[in-house]
Image (cartoon, rainbow, N blue to C red; front, side, top):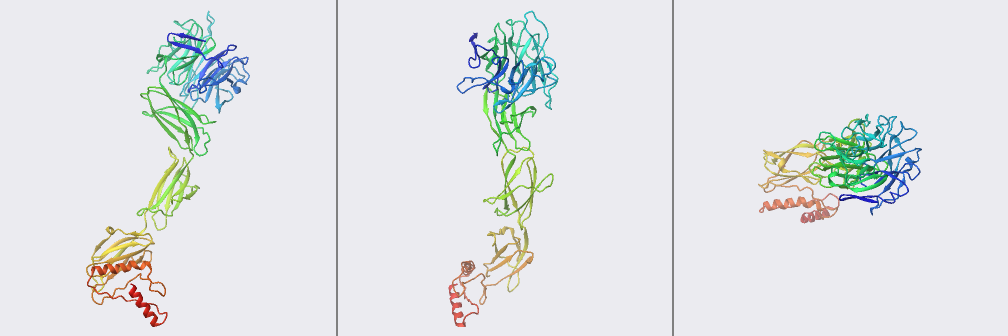
Length: 608
């Protein structure tokens, strides 16, 4: 069945939701518009049923909500799905009811609804409470109580009440929604997803005789605007139970105990919104998590609402209204957090977003320990403690193939690191995982400074014992490091240099102003003298230069490869003194005959 009012057409949902032999009543649609819950008498009494919207736009065969309907009652009705999709509110006559009818709720358990829970006092009383509707921010619950007035037309009238949840999550004593909402005969309030628009039924002057549907909005001063009759769907029959998805463009309602739907004209629509929904899961196990969603005004930092998702499958749904910038934080104790930001100040169209959130209880911390000067990885000792309790952490520390240390650290704790390595200065730092943790993988580089010892080199003429200005080249034999010459200061043959403790160095000294070269070896340790006297031989007839680091194979004149570095120094010296005549002398050990050793010495000298 359908009918039109002006340019707008209304039609029943039709089978399988609407039937000819039974009555379907009080529809409630989810924020995403894909779940419809209503009451029907198809089981012999008023019970609740659920239908799902298929991809082709058709509604599924309604299913009885078993855990609610199986509880003995003469009436279960007025269903209302919370905008996050996790709670179903309704009223019923159950054995544990406070009065003639009480408001109950059921939480979603996966694809099913759980057993009814009485919302309790102060909302429920010894009187009748019915047709609840929860605001999208979860802070206000609207419902009705009877007026107990008799009318000639026999219409049963009600008043609309609202209860507000305090910061501790407790419902406060309900109060009457003020004029012009409540006048004389109201029913079935439905607060929209913008938290500012309310649809309700009323019998009032100017209406069509029975209950008609009206719309009102909260003004900036916190007052309700004068209700507008929904003339595009109102009829002379009873029009009630408006339900609108977060998109705000389609309305479900009752006319004469059948469910109808219609497109809402722009002037009757709520403020524009967006719907964000998805699943909150454990990053590592992929299991659903029960978390808290905190929505703030990003400009004022005011907390607008705090809601919980559904712990059975991790599903959440939030509705954000145009006109603000939002900060949406997903939080669970001892887990990481995620923050989303939305600028809806100039929102033009409704939209839906799917945002799956993964939270983790521990981070992968990659620690690189390097030499500060050479930036080479070091073998380090890591002492890790809880910064608050000072207890030694039991976190597992593994070294990766890249030389980094991988440490798995539970969040919500503060850690103190002491990093040490042999012959290096220790470093410490604190890693705070008690505040907002956004990233599963964290990295840090720690550069350790090598312990160094100051050495003074006194370079002199071997004959006059006077200080010389020379060129010095120092090489770390353990690390293949060349010491920066800029770090050395020479005056009257005195040179100061800082060398790493525990390392071996070669010190090559040269002077191209008539002097030979010197090649010394230094091992830096506690026993090594802090000052060294080095004498350089003047180049003149008869001067003898002892070559070091010249090695032969046993019983051979073949040179070790390492010998050529010293020989090349002789070559450079000869190039600097092209007129010099050089004699090369060699020797052997005392093994073998004198004749054999003399011949081997000759060959060695010739080979050099």
